[in-house]
Amino acid sequence: MKIQNVKGGYDFLPKEQKIRNYINSILKEIFEQLKLKSQPHHSVWFFDTIKRAQPGKEDSYMNDTQLTEKKKAQIDILLQQGLSMRKVASIMGIHHSTISRYKRGVYEKRKIDIQEKYEIFIKYLFDHYDRRSKSIEVCIYHFKKRYRGVTCPSVQQTYKWIREGKIFLTRDKLCYKKHKKKNKTNNMMEHTKWNMKNKTVLPIRLRPKYIEKRKEVGHLEIDSILGLKKEQPSLISIVDRCTRRLWLIKAEYKQEYYVANLIYQYIVKNNIPVKSITTDNGLEFHVLGITSKKLGVKLYKCDPYCSFQRGTNERTNALVRRWIPKGSSLKMKPQIYLDDICFAINSMPRKIFDFKSSFEVELNYK
Image (tube, rainbow, N blue to C red):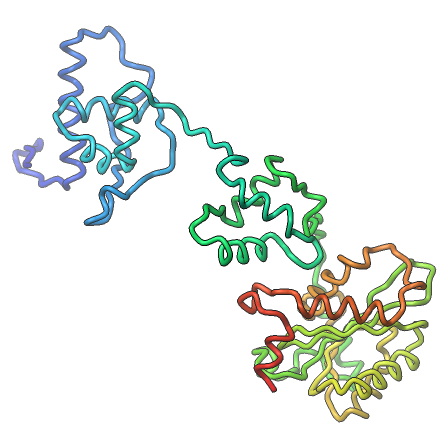
C-alpha cells in the first residue's frame, strides 16, 4: 500500500500500519452512516499494539487479560470486515473461544473455584506441609512427582492465595516472616583500620577465591545462636559451605577460651573435615585462632556489621530458629535434642541441591 504525502512522493508503510489505516477508514465510514452525534467514550480509533502468534501456533496463542470495552469494539470492527474468528483472535492476541463466546453474547469473566479445581492439591498441602521441614516449594515438587496429570498451581500462585486468604494457610504459618529492612551504612574505612590493627587474623578479603566456588568440603563457617538475654548458655553452629551440613554445640558459658576449646574438642571427636574457618567478630571467638592453629588451618574473620559475608551460616541459623524461636530459653535444651535438630535439617530437601538433602550431597564428595 502506497500513500501519497504532501510533497507528492509515496511512503511505504509497514504491515501493521496498513491494518490500522484500513480499520480507521472503515470505522469513519461506519460512524458517518450511523450519523453519530458524538464519539463513544472509549477510544477505538487506533489499535495500540497488535500481538501476533508464532508461525504454526496461532490456535494455541492466548493472552490472559480480560476483554475491555476497547477490545470489544475492536472485535466488532474486525468481524464486520468478514474476518474469521480465528483470524481475529490471531490479530487481537486472544483465544478464539473467547471471541466465540462474546459473539454468542454469553461472554463472562472467568471465575475459578480453587477449592474445587485444586481440591487434590489443597488436601495434599494440608496433610504434608510443615513449616519446619517441608516448605511450599518442597510440597509442590513432591506433588508433581506423585500426582502426574493432576492440575497443580505454581509456587507464586500458591503464595498469592495465602496472601489473599483463599486457602487454609496464613502468613504466620509460613517458614519465613518478612522483616523490615534497616538501612545500615558501611563504614569501609573503619573496616580497613580494624583489619590493619588485627594482623594476627586474616581478614575475609584475603580468603582465596576457590573457597567461594563451594566445590570442596571442609571450609566451615561458625557462629553463635543466643537464647534469653540474661542467660549464659548459647549454641555454636558450624556449617560446611559446600554441602550445607550443620553441627550444633551447646556452650554453657560465653568465655572465649572455653568456647575455643569446646569447638576444638567437638571437631576432633566427630572427625569433621576442616580446611578453613570463617567467623564473625564476636567476643566468644576472640581466641579462636588458637583452635585454628591446632587444626592446622587458616582463620578468616568477617568485617564488622557484615553478616552477609557469612550468608550460609546466617541462612542455616534461620532454619534452626524453626525449632528454637528467638527469646526461648536454652537451659533445658540438651545436646541430644540439638543432634535431632541437626539430623532433621540435614535430611531436609533443599531447592539449591535439586531437592536433595545435605546427607545425599555429602556422599558425592566421599
